[in-house]
Length: 205
Image (cartoon, rainbow, N blue to C red):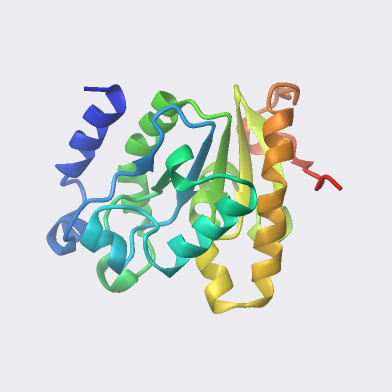
């Protein structure tokens, strides 16, 4: 059994958060390629994910698959997970304690998969890696920490609620192939994590 499979088994039996443990149907550790170059991190499982145990299988997941197709990828070629692994009751926002409790799982996933790029989807995952930033200001930009580039995007669900964001999300996704090409050449700036440099990725013509 792989290290990621063993980790997922540990996540499935986690009972750190009483409200989540009591209300969940299934735990949703993550899904995809175990040595993926691209790792996408959303917020939390929704109703469909809670039923199936797989992240991004509802309407937002369908849009994410369309976005991946726009850069010639399938979800089987990337790894997809969430900040927290259980559906919050009534789809409420994750509590700070829940984000904290799940952080070790996410950190271990990143360590094992070791992607070239981590794409944060929405403000909850963005806040973990872009401290104190606003998603409206930093979407479509990236920072490098260690050997991994962190790239901020709106959550696909945002386009379902606000159609004007759909084009923004589509354009930000189209920057990822160039970012992958740059992954080896972007220099890490030796600064504290809260002050890491940001760089904007331009679309290729």
